[in-house]
Length: 355
Image (cartoon, rainbow, N blue to C red; front, side, top):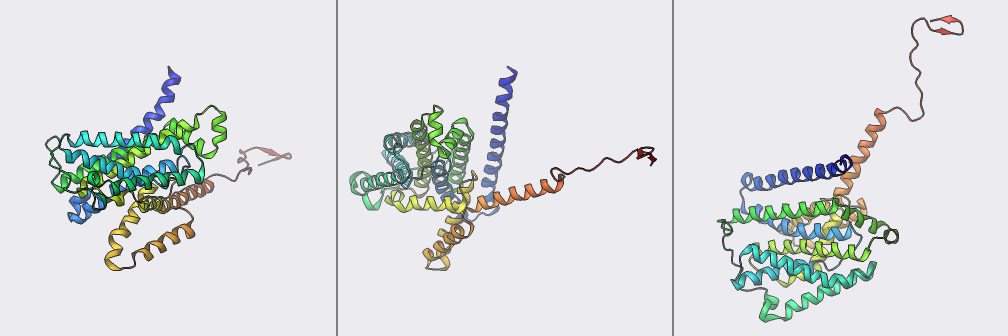
């Protein structure tokens, strides 16, 4: 019993720490609109929540498992459209529609992932892109259901949830912030679980993982489905905010933006993709105000980071902190192998002389 308690306690300590950080982060997100009451900030942060979940969920595949998906936005769009269509039907509440949209997206990802995860490297990447463009084509051509190029028409109703009026911008923002933090916390627990460390082993040496008895295909499929479900929550948040869903959600450029977010922020640090999301969304929202050459500015920033730093901003900061900590430890400890003799006591004899 004592051994089992020792094994569980570090997990509980890690969960408690993650929950404390999540509560602090949520408090900060809820306080920002009070400190800066401009509606533009709330709108920007909701976009950040939606695309942040897209980038974070993609990094579960790219950074954690070594699966580079070019079609992850397909599940972002699936969640948005499924939620919007269910709400337009008027038959379900927002929580039921959200759960059904996430569950439906997970089923779609299960079918697609069962095919994709059997392939390796570039073949995996391109078949995910092919499935995304297939879903995009369905959205564009099924006009009677999806609205085609115009997207879902008629808006998405926002009935009250437990007495909360989501038509109030502040209540909508708070709800999105809570959902965002809960999803980040869930992804953190997956990444730090034994399942997450098994995925790291698959990323680093799949042959060895298979030799040790790990069902590599099943593990890849599991994280593929979970990442798709988390991406669908991001699409759901965006659909609820803009009161619609559009084919651009499933276009290949949206997946490209998610990859850019990971490249800008980094994939080594867990929250690195959020740093990249913040930078990219800032460029998307504010650079266009001052210049028409948005693409040129964005491309320049990406080239500077990718070619100059060779890793994301969060990874650079993490490596710098680790190197600084190592220097401090080396400065405080004696040089390995050195020997400093102990001081001699009064009256000690050295070659017959008393000191």
